[in-house]
Amino acid sequence: MDHTSNKLKKEDEKIEIGETKPGINLQGYCTNVDCLAAKAKLPVWVNLGFGDISFNSDKTSYRCPDCGHFTVTSIIKAMIFNSEHSICASDNSIPVKDNHYQCFYVIKQGLAYELKAKKIRQHATNLEDLIDRSESAMMSNEILNLVAELQKYLITVVKPPKVKDKVRLLEKIQCDYSGDFNQVFDIGRFTILCDNPTKLQTAVAVMKKAEQFNLIVSEDKDFFERQSKTHHRFHNIKLYVPKHDVYVEMQATLKNFTTLEGYTIIENPKLSHLFYEHIRAWKPNNSEEEDLKQAGDETLTKINDIICEWIDDKGIQKIANRYKSHLDIGILKPPQLSKKTEIEINASVSLKMAQFVYEQLCKFTPEKMKGKAIYVILYEYYKKYLIGDKNPASCADFASLLQESRKQEIEEDIAILHALETYIPLQANNYPHLDGDDNKHDTYDCYQRVFQFLQEEKEEEDGEKKNEQIQQFHKKK
Ligand SMILES: [Zn+2]
Image (cartoon, rainbow, N blue to C red):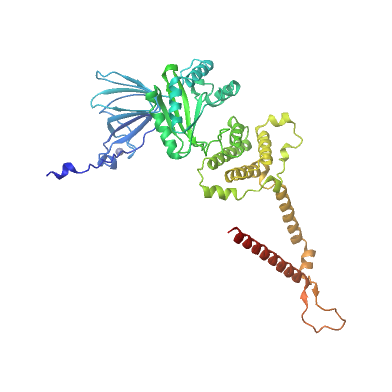
């Protein structure tokens, strides 16, 4: 009997060196004798990004990601990621044009190749056109079928109620994309909300099989495992709808992380977005504003770290423990706002920011852990950057500053200090004092006696309370 053929087959572990990135990636072999990857005959990935390239498959000189030398001399595979691209070879094969998010091509030995890869862009002729296409796509059977499929698995799909208001959209296009409307993808953006990370994984996998719905997944950005710049945590997929020649965005995240009105469990969910809106279009005029913007960016990141749980429960709780309500500490209005008119405030981003944060701190009264932690982060930003570390940001700060200066005054006042040193405690006895009767020794410090007495009383009280609680506990049982 042949034992070897019956054996369960082990899967070969695929070993590749280097990682793939958006744009063109070529896999080949390094020939540097001092390169470890070359010695082990392991294929390496070379990232070339977006652009046009041409090469002869066995006469290349690309940079090896391992040894850093330009010694990758032959290519065996191409992978084009998150890109509209084309590829053609010098044999009789038909050139390919594609925009699927991840395409692998075998590169044959001895052939010449030409590759073109562009970042995904819309194909509209103007903003109106883009809005029309997006709206048609969102109502198309292709998209509706995909949405229905996701909903079958109890995944929440939220369709934006209407297209964003045009003024804001134009401002955003101007500011973020220097007027290039074909870089806008969130005109019709679906939000997909899942109960847990596994459901999210399923939702993403279903979307990636969008070909069965006549849709093409053209871009896949995983900001769920990897942090985005703003630390918003989501999986972003761009779906191409061929019928309307437009891309529609699907953003998948967990129900716990969303700040979407009507779906969120975060307290004061608009806070992070409003904060973002304040700093988004801000072009600082001086180094002071530069610092303030930088601190604002960091604060927003920290708020998102709490909302999207980049910080774990324990860490969030630790921050939340520092929470003190406005009602307890009395936040003070920023002095820079005093005697300023609404017009003056609106003309300055830093004044607007000071007003916004002050108002938020006064009206936001969080009850849950995340809410409290967010409040703490916002207050700390307020205290450090909008008020200034040395100035009081609340009545409580003011009181402790007074306390501090009183202490300092006493320390500086030699007369008082001297008086304290020679201070004779008030003494008392349990019997009336008679002149010339100095021999009795049970005299005690009057203050200490009162303190002791009060302490005992309190302990007794606490003891009684405890007893009551124990009795109640037993009754319940
Ligand atoms: Zn190498």
